[in-house]
Each structure stands twice: as C-alpha cells, then as structure tokens.
Amino acid sequence: MQTLGRRLLQSHASLRRTTLGLRFAHSQDPSSSDPTRTASFGFRNVPEEAKEGMVREVFDSVAAKYDLMNDASSMGVHRLWKDEFVASLQPGRRGPQKCIDVAGGTGDIALRILDFAREKYACRETTVDVVDINGQMLKEGFKRFKKTMYHNTPQISFTEGNAQGLSKEQFPNNTYDLYTIAFGIRNCTSIPAVLEEAYRVLKPGGTFACLEFSRVDNPLLSTLYDQYSFSVIPLLGTILAGDRQSYQYLVESIRRFPAQAEFSRMIRDAGFKTGKDVDGAAWVNLWGGIACIHTGVKV
Ligand SMILES: C[S@@+](CC[C@H](N)C(=O)[O-])C[C@H]1O[C@@H](n2cnc3c(N)ncnc32)[C@H](O)[C@@H]1O
Image (cartoon, rainbow, N blue to C red; front, side, top):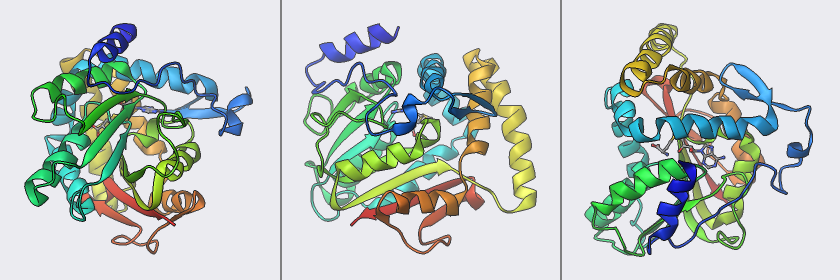
C-alpha cells in the first residue's frame, strides 16, 4: 500500500519533489545510533528506532478514514481549532509567503493557508509544501486537492519526508517564511530534532507554528476530557475505522506530550524567540488547553 501511495504520488506531474528512503537515523539526531534508548509510543516505551515504523503503521491504517474520524472524534471541533490556528498566522497579509506544512497528512492546514491568503488578501502566490512521512496520508491529501483550484498549480506540492531529517537538497536552509505542524509533532520520535529542522529551513524572521493537543489545567474539564477520550475515541475507531488500537495510541500519545511551558522551553532551546511563558504569549490555549498553539520566531 505504501509503495502504491508513493507511485501514485510520484507519477503525477504536480508532485514536484519526493523524499524517499529517509530513515529515522538522520545525521543530526545523535540519539538515533544508541539502541538502548527508548521513545514513548502511547503509554508504552519502545526502542527509539522502532517508533517511527510503529507510527507509520498507525497512519497507514487510519489514512482512508482519517478525515471522517477527525470529524467524528472531535465532533467537528478540530476544524475550528485549525481555522483559528491559520487565522492567527494571517498568511498572505504581508504579501505572498512560502510555507511548509510538516506532518501535513491530508492537507487540512495547507488548504486553509491557501484559502485564507486568497479570500482575505486576494493572494494567489502564497505556496505550501506539504511534507509527511506517510505516503498513504499524502495520497488522501493529493486526491482532495484534485477537487480544488490549487491542483496542478505551483501553490501546492506533496513530498514524502521525515520531519526529523528533511532532505537538505529539497528543503534548503533559510527557505520558508512559515513552518506549520499540526497534530504531528507528538508522533515524532525526537521533538528537538523536528525543531532543529524547522529552524534550519525557516528564513531569519520566519515563524514556527505548532498546533497540538496539550495539557488541561482545569480539574473538572480534565476529568471529563479523559473520560471522553479514553472511552469514546477508541470505540469510534472500532466502529468507523475498524481499528481500536490506532486510536488508543493517538489518545495515549496526547498524554505523553510535554505541557505548554515545557514545550515552549524546547522551542526556545532550538533557537526560536517566543513570548513569555503564559497563555496568550508563548502559547495560546484552545478550549482550556485541550489544544494549544505555540509560536516562535527564528532570530
Ligand atoms: C494526526 S496526523 C495530522 C495531520 C494534519 N497535520 C492534520 O492536522 O490533520 C499526524 C501526521 O503526522 C505524520 N507523521 C508522523 N511522524 C512523522 C515524521 N517523523 N515526519 C513527518 N510526518 C510524520 C503522520 O504520517 C500523520 O500524517
């Protein structure tokens, strides 16, 4: 299936670049050579080098039903969060922007960026390069873009690649004005490696923006949210996608992701400038922290 996805993507003229054969062991991640290191896979710890393949299996399995499941499990709320994420970035406001959407999956963020720039600022020169490790997810995104005005234009491209080690030939240093990653970074084995790559490909002054599930402080909301996500989401996975395990992983992986202030520190450690460590500055909580937008600027 994965090969089919790759072939399909490769065969199309608008697929400008394909990053094949990238493995987790990329040169900038020193941890990757140590077989004793572990990474979280949901609530389990697994050998670090195994995580990438396991995550890939999850998204291979959910790709065809991913959009449907997103709508069902969040009752459509993910759309509001994504709208708010993109609106907060104002793509196209200062003229055409070169954007990269990493772990871009089926292209939800890319489509919103292009629509926002066009509808709000009449900008048709903003571009988005969608990158994802999973050919099946990209294939779904590609199919979806075929129905849009952006299909076969230089405004969109789909590339298979690893957020932790983007190809330097395909994604040179200091290239992008905006780097987005939505609900993707928690699936990556090494968050620092992703941030390092984001910093590398952004131009000085460029913006890193991450939308991710985060930590809910309110105890009542947190309890309700836990009950909902641990019982309803895996059940919906079984009913709608015939796959409980993948959705169990997705819910568990949310709980393993660093809380707002810790992630913000990681962003700064990668070299980005952020606002102060409070809601409304370095990050903006959505729905009490169920999701959260983090931004940083490359200095
Ligand atoms: C939950 S989906 C999010 C997709 C999309 N950004 C959205 O908001 O709908 C997570 C995506 O991360 C991708 N992914 C996981 N690990 C990755 C990695 N190391 N590099 C690039 N993409 C990765 C998966 O293949 C999947 O498409």
